[in-house]
Length: 426
Ligand code: LRH
Ligand code: MN
Image (cartoon, rainbow, N blue to C red):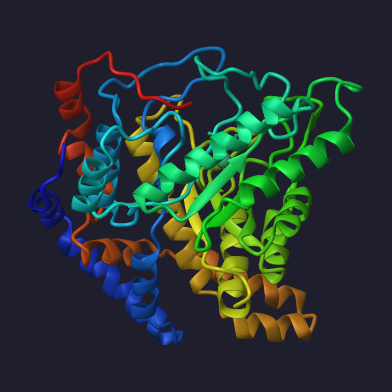
């Protein structure tokens, strides 16, 4: 399904007047504060987030999975759904594939389809946390960390295969997340598991093309519940440093123990030039993969405040890979992703309103109250008219959820695909 831009403009027409009033008010009050609106709008338009190919169907847990029908049952249909998100939001201009869930059958056809929808291929993800039917070795007790060399070799070769697939699509990064770890004390030798992982990552690193990045994703637990080999940012950083300059850490917001100060982690990784990218989502307890900004919007704002500071002051850190990693148990996957994209844009826009020079001055004066006032003034500013303007000027929807519903897209997808299609992924 491809959305015709005129249909989006039609749905916008009813809200254009009220949008203009809101925008004029915002532009007026922000300009009075010396804010350069046009620069912010340009930065919002340039901020493209990759959609996870594994999160376009209904997610599920071990307790159950409830479909939304009309799910994409092929990579082509997944790319089309990302196209719908991008047409409405103008900020979903990339997709991140997960292998083997999304192995292209016809590379040229897939690339042409993505091109026609202005979708780029961001990082490709390997998968050594599940056994494939025809696989010779099992990853039950680990992959890159496994004590058995034949199993490590199979996992290394899989990552090399994923690089080759990404290369044919124009991707420029490989994301490695390992479930490797243990469920009980004594089950693993921590040092052997770490050393094997380091050596295996180096073998993969040596096959990473010169203009690519290797993104090493950490996670404290699940599916292992006693230890995880790449458990935290420090471990990921150590492994990235051991690999070399093309290796970086990947921060999945849901991969932190309760009350972790993620904005501080982000700040220091940028200072060290080793922050490679994000998997945006939100969570209340564990790796809940909930809608971005739905639980801790202020924490997301504080992370973007560090990102804006880092993008201005840390030229040693490369451009970041912006990706969503979510799972949808009770929401229409496309509506959930639209809300996540909105929350990311909102946090970024509010962070761009922070007067970093004024904040630095207040910090040097130890004026703690003023520091908080500067941050919260930005956080409490309604930036939604700026987001809408950024979308409108690029042909997007003033209100993507409203347009998604008034164009009755889910039912059109059900008519086209039926009720029994199931998307590959989580
Ligand atoms: C692990 C993870 C990783 C993906 C998987 C789908 O929890 O965040 O990024 O490979 O989800
Ligand atoms: Mn992730």
